[in-house]
Structure formats: structure tokens, C-alpha cells
Image (cartoon, rainbow over all chains, first blue to last red):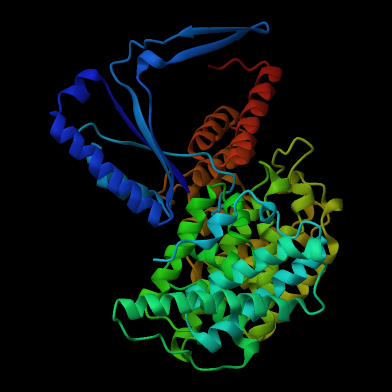
Length: 120
Length: 427
């Protein structure tokens, strides 16, 4: 089963962590990702570009319009996500708990829609 | 640490193994894999290195044979190439080890009759120390002879992820101290259960994958059936092996009717039974009948028997529901699970009416899409269309299967249109 691990936050949240501590979080995240790669469970791990770099694409009657933003009013936005392919929900939750971000911002775990459903 | 040799082959012609060799021809080649691998491991030990070497030989065959022609003896060719790769690798390892001044070379394991190699490999690949995804991946490579790229495509993950999963699985088997021999008799029944589980999981992975780029994905259902057949040849006296193969055949027989032209799921009651595969049904019925007569009856045999009762009904309304209900009663005693209780609830509803079914569903204390969709179905039978619609929508939100979600939402929409047509405007 594939799961998506999502980390949300905002500038205030990220900057509240002292730089050396933030560097340590990144270092430990890299180490965890390496471990997940070696176990064959890592599909991909990505940091998401800042909100300032986001574009919105809309097609209206065949006309493509690209605008900057959305500068969402949301208090928190997607900062990074990881996709793992592992044995069970329990294992996905265990992986989330190993991620240092779970001690700062929390990690949302969502199953990905699947082609197959073994217990059907 | 062995750098996964297969990862260097991605994207090349080896990405489509057997291109230029006919599909049947390539299947024949893949059938040789457990034999070739078995004879290497029996001679040299080092299951992990031998498995890599056979994979490399297979990839070499897939690029060379279309150009140079197929060798007279494909098996001898694969064995020679794999042995060469293996000895190169072992020599390099040996000199590395000598440099590091470590002795201890893994001794070659005891020789056994080569006919048992496939069985021994199955036991090894389905080792209990591995997670289910790893068991599936390793079985597909070492026993079914698929390439890492093909397996990665079947499970929709990057090739590097799959290569790593296989290599880690082999490390784990080694660390668990498993050797290339059949498990001792007292463990064998239990270990065989794991093998059956892995094959059934493989079957389901393939059977329920009704959408997506099918053309590029190897047919896991066919692989599972092929491996179950091979297993039955090796363990002909085990009723559960026959039961599992029968269950696969009787389920797969309905595949042509299981989805409509748009790829949407069609429920069993609404399937066009004329398009079911009669040969597969006959074979499955014969297998399960034979196994029920003489052996202690296990869960696969019972599930196969239930599938057989469905498959033998010419029309949905001809289904022998009392028989199915009795079989689910037996199954619940042999292998109780919420899924079995849910299925028994459907059978009870068909025999005694939806209320009896709903009473049983209430006892299943799990909030899964299975429970919600059975509740929805029984509420619909009962005529409580509003409650059924809510339950179908709830089930759709809980499932992570794309085709099933579509199916459940279309049921909800269908009930909505029935209600609108009847002029019932309850909120």
C-alpha cells in the first residue's frame, strides 16, 4: 500500500526553530529517507517550493490563464511530502513517527488510491 | 553491500525483455529460471549472488537472442552465462575478503533432487522474516523470472525502489540464517501456508487491477495461477494447494464479465454469465471437488467451493444461497474473520431476508468500506434507499481502490435517480 506523509506549516512555524536545530532536522530526515530507500519502501521524498513560487493554471473555454499564487489565506501550507510503499498502515504510521518533523509540526498520513485492493 | 546490477539496465532494450522473442517463447525461458537458479545455488551456495547472476543472464538473453538468434539449448546458455557472472562476482568478493583478512566462505548447501528446486525457492522467497511486499517481489523475480523493471511496473513504483526491496529481502533471508533446503517437516505445513498466502495476494493484486496502463503491466493473475499450478505438481496431496488453484481459476473465470466497456466494475448479480470462462470453471470445479472428497477441509477449499456454487448458477437468481450460507458457516469456524462474517451476512440476507443480514452486519465492529458497502447493499434490498445511498457514499469515501470507488458512487447515483423518479422528496 502506498501512503503519503504530508508536513504542513508556515514561515512562522519554520522560523521558530533555531537554524542549527533545523539543520539537525534536515540531517535526520535525510538519514531516515536513506534508510527507507535501502529497505525498498521509499517511492519519493520532496520539499515543496515556497508559496511565492506557486502558479495557478485555469482553463476557461480553451483559454489558458496562468496567475501567480494562490497566496492562500490558509494558516499553514504544504511544506514537503514523502511517498512510501509499505506493508500496512501501522508501518506508515511508524515511519511518520520516526520523522523528526512529527515532533515539531505533526505529519498527516493519507493512503493513496490504489489499483488493487487485496482484501476485496 | 552489492551494488544492484539490475539497476544499470533500466531504460535499455532490456526494459522489454524478450522483445523479438515471441511471448510464448519468453514464457518458456522464464520457466527455466528456478531450475537454473536452483542448480547454481546447490553448487555454489550464495543464494543472493546466484539470484543476481541469473537475473543478469536473463537480461543478457533478452538483448542478445533477438539479434544473434535463440541458442539451441536456452537452459544451457542461461546456466553458462549466469555461472560466468557468478564466478566473476565471487572471485572479486574473495579477493576483497582476502584484502580485508576475513575467512569464512559460506559453504555450498547440501544437494537435493533438482525437481524440488522450485519448491525450495518458493519457501525461501516466502520466508516469514520478510514483509508481504518483499515476499511478492522476490517470488516474482527468483521463481517467476520477471525482471526488476517489470516488477516495478506491476506495482507502480520506481525501479530503484524495487531493486532495493529485492536486495534487502535477500539480505534479510541471509541474516535469518535460511539455507537452500526444504524446511524440516514440522515447519513445512506452516511455511506452506505462507507460500499460499503470497500466491493469493499476488493473484488479488492482479485481479483487482482493472484500470491503469494494463498493457505495460505484466499479468500478475496469470503468474499467480502459473505458480499455483507448479506448486500443485510439487505438492499434489495437499488439499489447500488444490483449493487455492481452484479458487483462482473459479474467480478468474469471471474476469471477462467483471468490468463493462468503460472499465467500471459489474457486480456478480449483474454480470453476463455467458462470457464466463467455462473451461476454467470446469477445471476449478473438478479440482475443488476432488480435494473436498478426501482431505481435511481448509479455508481455500471452502472459498473455492463457494466460488464454484456461484459459477455453476446459470442465472444469478438460480444461485444456491442455502448452500453458500452453509459453506460460509463452515468457513467462519475454520478461519473466522470480519470479512467472512460480512459475506455470511450477505448469504443470510439472500436466504432469510435483509433484516437478518443487517443484524449480523451490526456485530462486525470495524469501520471499513467492506462493512459500509455490505450495509448499503442490504439497505437497498430492504428498500431503504436513502439510508442505502448514504452508506454507499460512506463506503466510497473509505475505499482506496479506484474501480471500487467508482462502482460505489455509481450505485449511490443510481439510487438518487430512482428516488427522483419516484417523486419522493424526503430530504
